[in-house]
Image (cartoon, rainbow, N blue to C red; front, side, top):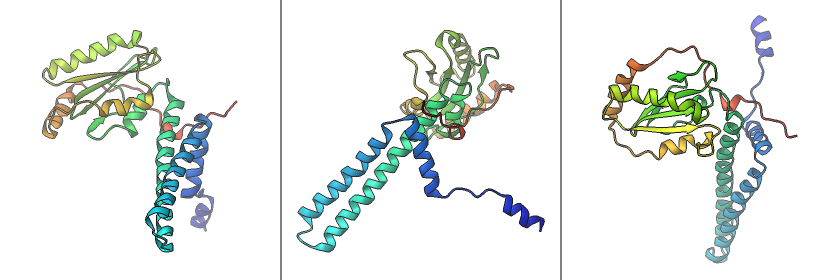
Length: 235
């Protein structure tokens, strides 16, 4: 009886379609153009499928149906891809500027070939400005979170630490903050993906091991999970 009561109380997880609808609603609240881009992404492949059916099917009804069906499926795929990208942008847009936002990107959206902790390697306890570090085929990436005027010294200190133990490894610096020339949070992963690969996998492992001596155990809350943030209500 106890097991049955526990099962009865367990909340039922929403189905796939309901989850997609919730993501769409959240995205639309933040990005009013998302639905129109999705519509365009659906209509263009369908129109292409219809044109191909008219000109290539040669009057064959079965081939016309197949071309149109292919256009519809392609349109759905394109619309879902657009939704995914816009949803990610909307989610990160809601936590942009919060402490731990870069940690959220490190947790869920680091480009392939990069590895880093959602916990910062250096943090200002008063302002919550932080420095994050990742290692990949492009070398070492240092990401500053906060205004450049406050994170400049922290960033230089961390760069010197890395150079001291890894003098020949390239270091890339990124800045996420309110400054005009800063990288928007949702573009951080894309910017890191552009870094030229200069290390082998074996060298990446060696760099990671060497940097282990620099790790600091900081009592800092983990990064914000952007996909658990409640969407802001439209005013």
